[in-house]
Each structure stands twice: as C-alpha cells, then as structure tokens.
Length: 427
Image (tube, rainbow, N blue to C red; front, side, top):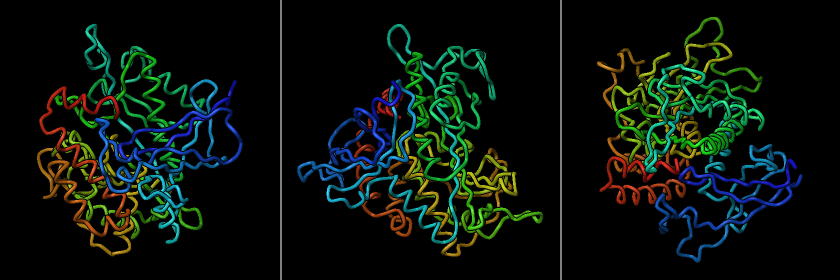
C-alpha cells in the first residue's frame, strides 16, 4: 500500500544518505533522533574526534526535523521519502548540516533581492562483477558519446532509472552516454535552489539503488578508471529578481550583466579554496588536471568547456553560468552553497574580473593557476581563505578539514584498485 512507511533521510559530510524508516508516513511535521557522531565517521568507518561531532562528549543525539510539505513519493514500494534538516539536541541548528548552510545561503541572496535558481548535472560510471567477484566496467560495446538505447545500455538500467524517477516526481532534462563508456550523464531540471539540490541528492540515491537491482554498481566517484575521463557535478546557477525576471538577462543588448560579472569574479577569486569542499577526496585530484575539461583552471568563458565557469551561450530568460569543478563525493548542499557564497562575495566585494579565456584548454590557455595539486593542498587553501570560511561557517569547515586530513593519511599507501575500492561503494 502506498505510503505505509516514511524514509527520513539527511545528507552527511561524506555525501552519504543516512536515515531511518518509520511506520505509517503521517501528514504532519516530524522529528527523528540520530547520533551526532555520524559526523565523526570516515569512509573506513573509523570514529574521529572531529570538531562538532561530540565524539568525546558521550556521542549524544541530534535531531532530524522534517516538514509535512516536504514529504514526497519515493521509489520503493509503499514508501514515501523526506529530506530533513539537522539540529542540536537543544533545538539550535546544527552547524555541520549542509542543507542548513544552503538555506542560509539562499536567504543571504534573497536579502539582496535575488532568488537563486539551480540545475544539477551528474556524471557516473557503471560497473559489474565478473565470475570471481571482481569489479569491471559495465560491458557496453556499442556505446559512444551521446549514445542512447540498448547499444549504450544493454541491460536498460537507465530506462528503469528514468521510469522510477518520473513516477517519484523527479524532472529529468536529459540522459545520455558520455565520451568514455560506460559513463552516463543525468541532467535534472533547473529551478529553486533548495528543491533542485534535494532532487539531486535523492536522485543520486535512486539511481544507485535501481542500478543495484540490475546487477550494476553505479558510482559518481570522480575518477574510477585512470585511463578514462572523470565524472563531475556541474552546478548551473541563475537568479530571479523581485519581479520574477532572470537577473542575468541583459535583453537585446546581450553581454554580461554586472551581477553575472560579480559572481564570476567571486568564483575566480576563491577558486583554489573552493576545491577543498567541491573536490573532497584524494581521488578527486586524479580528475582535476590540465586539459581535462574538469574545471581545473582558474578561468571562465562563454560556451567554453575548458574553463571552471562556463557562461551559457543561451541568453535572455535562460542566461546562467555553469560551475564545473565539483564531483560526486561532495555534499551537494555544501557544494552549491559554496558556489553561491563565493559568487556573493564577489558581488559584495566588488572584485575585479579577469578577461575571458581565449585558449583551447588543451594545448594553450591564458590561465596561469589551477586548483591545488592534491586534497591536502586544497584543504590548506580552504583553511587560509578566511572570507570564504566565514561565509560558510567555521565549524562546518573545521569538521570537514579534520575528517579529510585523516582520509589523506589513511589513503597515502593506497593506489590502483585499492584506492578505488576505498571509495567506490560509497560515492
């Protein structure tokens, strides 16, 4: 029977969907208690004395609170689903909650007269197991870039993803195979920022669960196959003004609005620090390399895939920018909030905007600086960017850096399949 249970979920610092099933999905608001120590956990399930986790204070509860209006249809039989916000046991907002940070970032923009609009593009590889249980790339011998149908997906798992997502109320703007197989891209509809990121968080979980039903492991890991292209998460952003108009729309005159220029300037200024949150694994820096179309360079351009910030060639009501650095290991709420806050700092601070990139991004580029060379260096850059840290919240950043430095140490001796397998089942 539809709706006989409720699946309450929240997104943690590792972009894991943690939650509980509750009986009889009700129609009212609700609260569920979880151990705050989940924010002390790394991928290897070790407990760390991470700031804000209260691991050394008896591992007390936190509260996941949800609103009735956010309860939605799920993709499992008889199950509805809802995304919760996190609070301390005394009712104050939990500083480590990425969704809470995104809500605050939206409010910051709304106070300035703008309502953020977001669209998320997700890239992922599919794997299957051979007779010995070893993970191998999904066999798609007829696949090619922009391929569709059984040649690109013989088991038709993407058809099932599309069907289940549609039944659950998601709006997909596109689905196709990528340049390297077996890689797929899922594009979700552009809309109000909170709903768009909720959709991205839940859709990623849906897609992985449907793939498992088809005997496949779908991973959003940034670089699971060293010899093939990486997988990113592209965050498309625009703003509606108080009249409901796209604030980037400059009308028949074309060109970039002052708001767009300020946003891009902020993203350029905070480029290196942003990597610590948007590319948060050791493996992320296998993807973020020159000539990789990954957002490596501190550069921007119009309809240019070799830059970090690509301004869409579509103007008018569809005007937007696409931030290309993030990957599927990042908490999507924190990642989107980081893009919004860096852009806001650029507008408020009146940062100068460097010229647009004129190089091809493969053999030549104007940009002289890229992201840090490793996760460790990216965390240092993040810690040093005090303006960005203040905009995001000291405690969330401190927790992230503490957990990720432990991850750097524990993966130092891993390479090849061993490093891949440290991440692949969770991302």
